[in-house]
Amino acid sequence: MTTPLRLAVPNKGRLAEPAIDLLHSAGLEFELSERRLSAAVRNADIELLFVRTDDIAEYVADGLVELGLTGADLVAEHGGELHTVLPLGFGACSLVLAVPRDGELATAMDLAGRRIATSFPRVTAAYLASAGVEAQVVEVRGAVEVTPQLGVADAVVDLVASGSTLRMNGLRPIATLLASEAVLVARNGTADADDRVSGLIDMLRSVLDARGREYMMMNAPVEALERIRELIPGLSGPTVMPLADPAFIAVHSVVERSQLWRIVPALKAVGARDILVVPIEKVVR
Ligand code: AMP
Image 1 (cartoon, protein in one colour):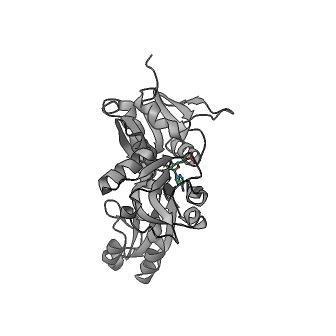
Image 2: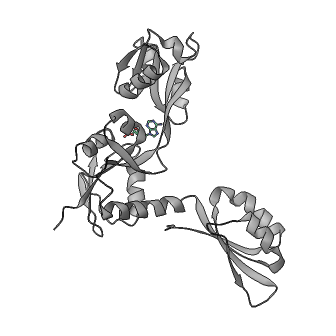
Image 3: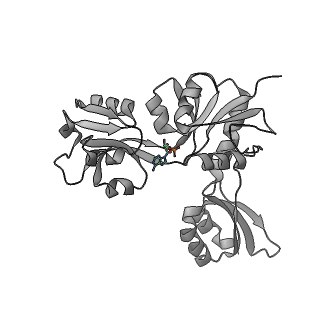
């Protein structure tokens, strides 16, 4: 018996639920126990280990697990020999340099000789070095955004999604150090040869490709086909089928959900009728 492929997943925090949801959507069957330490996947040779989001890059780097699901920001901060196997399209945020809104600091250059509080000391130091700025990096764990008010720092490097927490604390961003999202990571060179990894990636990708897309069906007059083709190019062009009435055709296609509001009225205007839009679960290429 081989050892199962081990995948570390956040046990709590903002990436935990979307991660579980993605794995379930990809068809992995597992139960979450009360204490959420680990779970054996029933229908694949995979074991899930639930650990702190912050520790996942280290688990992968140390070889305790073959794969990890965590934030790209944390992978960058870890700085180890890790590579991103698949970006996962959730947990989007940016790591920004922010300064007091009403202060005299305006650019990274103004930070020379100042103190910058962050939970990302490695990424921050690399950014300052590349900008040629000598400043003191003060490592703090949590509540980074209040440090300028407390007199602990002059500026911060912190994660933001909407930016409202920064604004509430009188800070404004002046530079973006990195854009992050949840990612699947492996240790350099370890995942490539394992079929279980490529199988998992294919299933995850099929779910991610389906997200934000819908399957659209309609009946339309034959002469509208060219115009419909322009409106809904589809993944590899729309499927066109004859109907009992030779003057009409049925057209099926995959469309971006965000484009529906634009496409539907245009389709109606060229004579499409009985338009059905249904969800897509997976797109396997
Ligand atoms: P947790 O502290 O467990 O809730 O997860 C933190 C991770 O969630 C970060 O490392 C980011 O990858 C991700 N994330 C997404 N949006 C945000 C945000 N607005 N603030 C902090 N972390 C975020």
